[in-house]
Amino acid sequence: MLLHIGTFFVIFIVFRQDITKILGALIHLNFKTENGKLALLIIVGSIPTATIGFVFKDLFESFFNNLLVVGAAFIITGCYLFLSGRTKDDQAINYLDAILIGTAQGIAIIPGISRSGATITTALLRKLGKETAYKFSFLVSIPAVIGATIVTASESKNLVSDVGASNLLLGLIVTVFVGYVSIRLLRKIMLEGKFHLFACYCWTAGLFVILAQILTKI
Image (cartoon, rainbow, N blue to C red):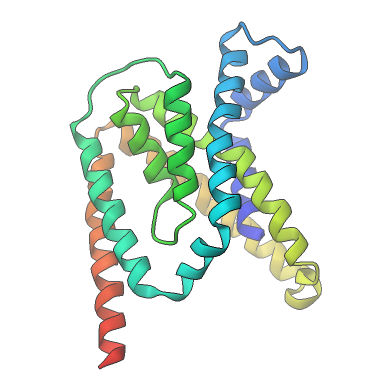
């Protein structure tokens, strides 16, 4: 739950201007403006994410106990990220793009699948511009983060008493700081056309996890 709250704070800080404009369009039901259309795209993109999360939640969570699945997911993520290095177009986002990006976000519930990696790469493969892919990837995550926070909150009623308020606050501060730096750095790397290089990290992590799991069985 702490991670979800921290993620929400970071996204709100980085994209506060966009979020304010989108909320304004929603409040006034003005869907003809650019921000109003973006609000609809976020809603449409959130539908497959919610559907996948609801239907496959138990299955995907069971993967956390299977390091071979996690390792394989890292490698798959790396292969997918590597494909993003071949995209150069700058098209406007449409509803099909939103659905596919939302689907990628839902699949990213699987441990080892990077949410931002999956959504941004999907956007780039759909020939969206780097800035559009970056921004929509995080804006479409807001409903998912809120939903995940609500779900985990109901499962963590005694979190404060178990961990301690001071420890929770410290954890939240660290999460927000690291998250903010990461999102800013990610944008810089994307605009420089180096996003696909994250594939090397995923491949290394995947092979390490699989090798570690195999060695523990020997």
